[in-house]
Structure formats: structure tokens, C-alpha cells
Image (cartoon, rainbow, N blue to C red; front, top):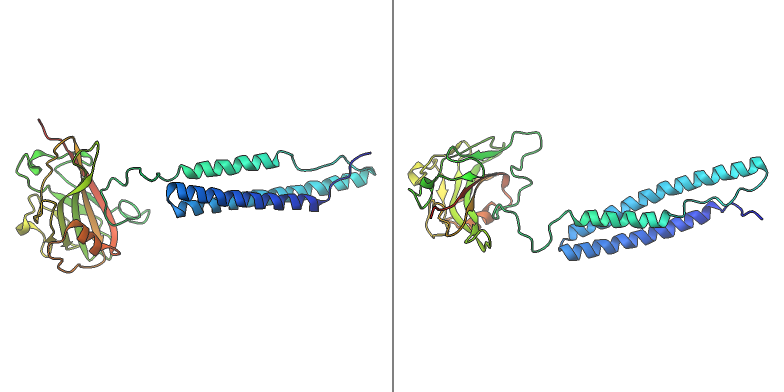
Length: 295
């Protein structure tokens, strides 16, 4: 005796149970990823991504099942006999399980794990990108005629020379900027193979937005009108050049465009300036130079 075509309701019930199962799996994967990577955002992304993807795929399979069932019934009526049992492929459940596992694996590779080294910019207010400018607009940027990006800084701007600040220039300051700030620091102190702290070399703020750069040897008398200096990590105002005790260090020259003119902060440290800038950064650019002392 030939088996009858199964009612569509039975397929829908199976799909409903499969949907509950995969949502539970996606939720569990989200919790595990969130705890493992210490990121609630990523855990929610895994859950929502897996749940939505599986739901859409199962919806397509439901539509295909209904259509397939209707065709089978029509054929059975035309031939005056029942067709053999027609049902969706038996590999549906294993295939969906493999799909969910692939989604979780792909999501796990998208964010650095806790304990990995943080952003090499050496800290600072968060920014949407290096410049913070919308895609397609001119990029806020900073450069120097003394060294190329990621190039070696001349000795004259270090403790092995005259220890004067390098010339810096910038362009495409975003609209609405009311002041600029510059922070120069070294995230590789004391040894780039085992860095323990970020050493601050220069802090300047309240630079007028009309300024297009800082001249070489920007002592207080050579700073743009209104610009103020904070304390470096030697505990003194002004510029202190690279003087790495070991290895080649990186020096981040970071430029911030602010939507406000900061008050007199009375020789702020980098941390104090960053706290004052929080919520006011329109864009950010950076230039990295390196230095290795000759033996």
C-alpha cells in the first residue's frame, strides 16, 4: 500500500520546532561569545544574525514545501493515484545545524579577544575612523616635512639632537571646528617588545582653527595666538623629543578638531586634556614617526 502525501501542517509543525531550536542555539552562542570575548554587543550580534538568517531560510523552505506539496497533490489527482510520500529533503536539519555553526564561527573572528593589544594609537578620545569625516569628503590629515608617515624622525627633533619639535601641517579642517589640539605620545615605552605605558611628549590645545600647522621648534613664542601647552611626562610644559631607552619606538602625532574652545586648563596632562575634549571631537588625524637611537 502506497503512503499518502503528508499534510502541509505536519511540515509546518516540524519547521516551527526547528525554528525554536535554532533560536535557542543562536541565543546560547550569543551568550558564549559575549562572555568569551567580553563583548555584549558582539554577543547580541551573533544571536540576532543567527536568528534572523535561520528564520529567513526556514521561511523560504516553508514556501518551497507548500509549493512542492501542492504539485504532488495535483499530480496525484490527475493520475488517480497517490504519489509516494513527498517531503522536503531529509538533510534539512543537518544542513541548518552546519549553517548556524558557520555563522557563529564567522562572528567569533570579527573582534579581538580580551588580552590582545589595544589600538596602537596610544589612547585618546574615540573616533569613527582615523579622520572621523564622512565617506566621500576630504580627509582631515596631518603631515610633516621632516619625516614621512611611519618614517624615521630626524635626530634634531630628539634628545640626540637639539630636541626641538618637528614642523607639522594639516588641511581640510572640518566645518564647525572652533579649536584644534595636538598630542604626541609613545605607546612603546619602555621597550617595544614589552610595552608597559604610553609616554607623553607634547600637549597643545586651543590652537585656532584657522592655523594650518605648527612651525619647527614651536616654543611658546612660536605657537599660534591663543594656543596653550600642557605637561609632558617629564613634568614640564612644551615639547620633549624621542629618547627611547631600547629599540625603535613609534611616536603618534595626533590632531583633534573640536567643536568648542576649551577654557584655560592650567597646564593639563594628556589625561586631563582628553577628559576636557570628551564629547567635543569632530574629527581626528594622526601621523606616526619612529626613532631608534644609534649605539
